[in-house]
Amino acid sequence: MKSEGEFVNQPDNTAFTQQRLPAWQPMLSAGIVIPLFTLIGLAFIGIGVALFITSQNIKVQELDYTGTATSSPCFQCSGLSIQNCTCERNFSLSELFEGPVFFYYGLSNYYQNYRQYGVSKDDYQLSGDTTYFLKPQSYCSPYQYSNNKPIVPCGSIANSMFNDTFRLYLLVNGSRKQVPFDGKGIAWWTDYNIKYRNPSPVNGSFAAAFDGTTKPVNWQKSAYELDPTDQANNGFLNQDFLVWMRRAALPNFRKLYGRITGGDYSQGLPAGNYTLQISYNYPVLSFGGTKKVVFSNVSWMGGKNQFLGIAYLVIGSLCVVMAIVMLIVYAKYKFPDNDDA
Image (cartoon, rainbow, N blue to C red):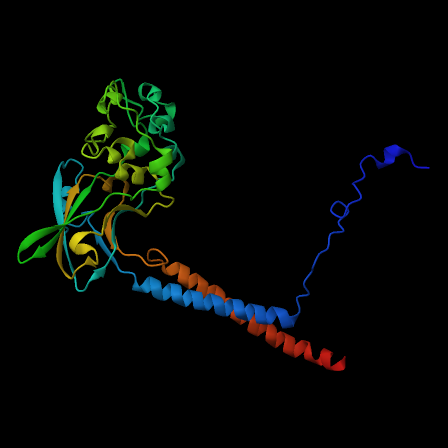
């Protein structure tokens, strides 16, 4: 007889543990695989054509304003020693640029995904914890203290915040008519409502919550002065600040600056001549970068993205080709066997 110890590790006698559950294993015959590949291929080709045509219909207008060429209107502003410089880029639209129009700024050769750069911030500060205002975390080094005062917000990401500003004008009968940018709601909802928080005012003063601290080295004004006219867009909840703090994954990227949606421009930008006035503050030549602005509209699939449509077309075509190859092989080597049967 077998002792009880021999059955200690024996699984329970159930359908699950003894692998007796009912199962279905498809028989992948040529009569199933070839039509399946054909249908998948045709479906992918149809989706690819729709995506590609939709992407082609999305309008994009790009304007480089780095100022490397001497003929560039921003050349005089590109030097590191130049301060408070303004330049202008003129462009024309031959037809209506259908709205809503999104306005982006773009940078190249800028590695926001660098690990030490990415961790150079104090999440406790950015969540409104004033304890860390006076004692920033060491991750922020070398932008932790300035003149023996703690920096708020500290770190390389905040210190390198993009600070060029733009004004767009439509030229009408020789005069300029400003086109307004809507900068509200351009940041991620989770960043604005969950991840970032402002400190509570002290004695009714928001600025008093920052007492004993100093602004980032490269900033022209403190965090509590980013938008003093709108407290919902001030401090760590400033939309431009939130957009910048959301790091890009690739070295060439663009970030949303605002939308053109209201008033006379609810249908988009009308045909005509435009002037983009640029307050040139952000240096990029020191690391071999470039700067540009991008006007773009969107569709049901989002922004312009030709790769997605091409990828669907390629995969769909490969599926159809494979179906044809399998049909040829099946017809050549399998039909005689079926006849003999």
